[in-house]
Length: 257
Image (cartoon, rainbow, N blue to C red; front, side, top):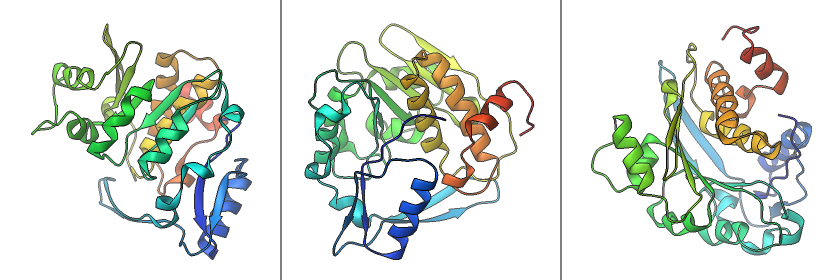
């Protein structure tokens, strides 16, 4: 998306780790704080994709679970940055990532994979990003919320302080932005689905990039939703994410899905 991106994470000192670092650097990601750890294997995900594009993922976390608060850059170096995290690393590390520093910028949590104990993080989060399954888990509901009213009620049950928002991604139906005062739907985009792997990551990354550029949350969500639509029209995870040029063309109807 053209943003200045720093990735904080951990790899093993193995070929998989070397390949991932090369891939990220080639895409312009700053890997200064991507640690290579002795005695740890690089994390892997094994993905099964059904004919309709839906996926099941088995994760071997590897070095991800060894990412500690000590691996984080100084808080001052993250001042005014948009901070985006997810839940495949220890909660103590995500907590430390969201805390401290002058000029604390927006903090986004893509709460995946859903871990109920991660609700303790929500007080530190400005924008919480969830899909319907994750919303059901964190709202502790027996059935997945289906109607818009049910989704809004479940999302609002997760708000713990003023000024927070929940963005619920709804697949082909788009997404819903919820705060205490209003709920705003963002319409989905119709595409031929090939593989949904990585769609949530693509959505979250584009949302963060647009917010860092000063876009409103609604405008950022519209672009993030379009990017995720392009991503599911291709096979793969990181390789399916569109470039900014591809996304801009799609938004004005120049590129068919």
